[in-house]
Length: 168
Image (tube, rainbow, N blue to C red):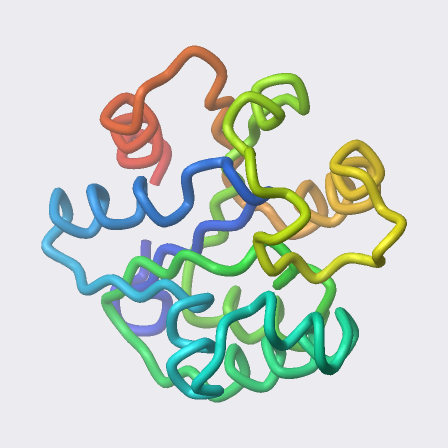
């Protein structure tokens, strides 16, 4: 990895794939900083993701997320993105210019066991979208932007981190 220009590791994937947890462990392991863009977005907005979706709609959340991602000025960070970051081609191009994009790939069945608050999690989705619908819609985008894909099935967070490190 070119440490001057592309010093970040950018985690993408579905909600529940482990981006935040893996990101913290990976940052510690590699002596990098860590940022969770969902937390950053909430801090900037002063409200929860679900509040944004409820009051302004899922498209507004995506627009806010894009603005936050485009505004990032980070190097030597592990960046855990929101699951909907891949809807913004502009943001993904910018993230890719500054880091390696890593897709944490988990099958729908496994995601269903991890996500218990789907309706209130603050997801950038249409009200009528199920988790399966969202998975089908986003999967192609994750695959499109990923430079590295990690099959997270049957792996704990430490093993996912080891696979990421070995793939860099």
